[in-house]
Amino acid sequence: MAVKLPPLAPFRPRIVQDLRDYNKERLARDIGAGATVGIVALPLAMAFAIASGLKPEAGLWTAIIAGFLISALGGTSVQIGGPAGAFIVIVYGIVERYGVANLLIATASAGVLLFLLGLFRLGTLVRYVPVSVVIGFTNGIAVLIGLSQLRDWFGLDITKMPADFFSQIATISRHLDSFNPWAFGLGVICVIGLFIWPRLWAVDSQFRRQIEQIDTVSALKATSRLPAPVVALVTLSVAAWALSLPVETIGTRFGGIPQGVPAFELPDFSWETVRLLVTPTLTIALLGAIESLLCARVADQLGDTPKHDPNQELMAQGVANAVVPFFGGMPATGTVARTVTNIRSGATSPIAGIVHALTLAAVVLLAAPLAQHIPLAVLAGVLLFVAWNMGEWKEFARLRQFSNHYRLMMVSTFLVTIVFDLTVAVELGLVLAVVLFVRRQSDLFRADLVARHEHQLTYRLYGSLFFGAVAKIDPIVAEVETAPAGTHVMLDASQLVSLDTTGLDALEQLHKALEKRGGHLGMVGLHEQPMSLIRRSGFADRLHTCQ
Image (cartoon, rainbow, N blue to C red; front, top):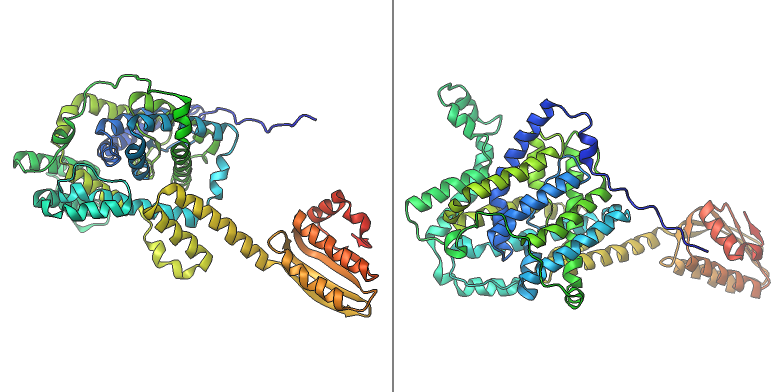
């Protein structure tokens, strides 16, 4: 008998639907939003690449190429794709252990896996990851991002940072004597400015109300629209260059950023290498899927656009991650900060994401030589700010409001992410989620004695009788073995919602125990699922009553 496979997901990019009723007004809004996000993406893309152990151009061209492909082929209207802070720890660890060439192979392989996940309609499975696990590893990654930036923030003379948590702390501690107050000062000013700038120009701020009353400061009003990371990057870079501050810059560490388009190159590929990179590939694919679909859900909540198509989004993420490695890029996914910026800037369709990529490409091609003056301490400040906003720190204070199960999953995932790595943390979180779910469901199952007559016991079953709850049938068996011979048992299954094969086996053992003592077992009030299993197994024919 041939096995019928489920239908494959259609490849249907959202841009096709969004362009059906497109007009000049929406185009103007998308161009404005895309240009804004492109400027915001500039410092973030460089910072993410440097923090991941790569050159800054790897982040820039990932934002350009992957950002274009994710917007053009994705299943959302306003999501922006590119390098993300969540990948920093993962990419840095892969580069340290396997090298950049193998990172490219793992990224391309993860892209293929992501595409297949979408093609086979597995996009909805990501929603089964418990929110406590997501919060735990998100906060853990935020801590690791912050820790990884202390070298440049303090201006420490460290040639190369190790990948694991305790080694990083030890390395930083050993090099504290090389502390650079100029770098630290730039980093502190950057962080403070990033916190103050949005509040300074908030709609209801006193400073903004005073400025709006002055007609002669139109330039200052225009400045209020500039994103805080761009303002920090430009002003502090100019200050460091003008004052000739002794701080490390992109130019001193990397020699600047190439101004041309990266060449298409095939990494050294072999199936033996791919087999060694199974774990990194799965890690990139898992994190990319979770981040992109969580970001898409955020976009659904904030934007006035149709709900996202998770399978199409995964296929677009797969294409982007399969392509960018051939241009020296890094893993890409949906990015919450840039997506929110895109929505708040008035984006209405994927055209905004395409404009974002084109804007970023224009800036890189025209102004790449200027990037060599950017202090690394300023980029570290930007990432510290990103890490702070990335973490959901209030959830720790709210732990007392939740169950011990929730606390255990969140805290253990958080700690394991920091001490070990994300893959182990997610695996542990999911295992704990399954174990604790089984325990909770088993606690919900009850078998209550509701009537006792001569030679008959009546029990009412509540909940799900499955492998985690079968031990609660044992007291009934024990009661039968001490009851007078010929005692019958009637089970009221009107409150029994489900039954699995292990639960069925427990009922058969009860039936055998009754038969040995001259009694019989009956069941009434059965719902569709338990009744179907009992009939298919043939157990219904052996029961005295089955209805």
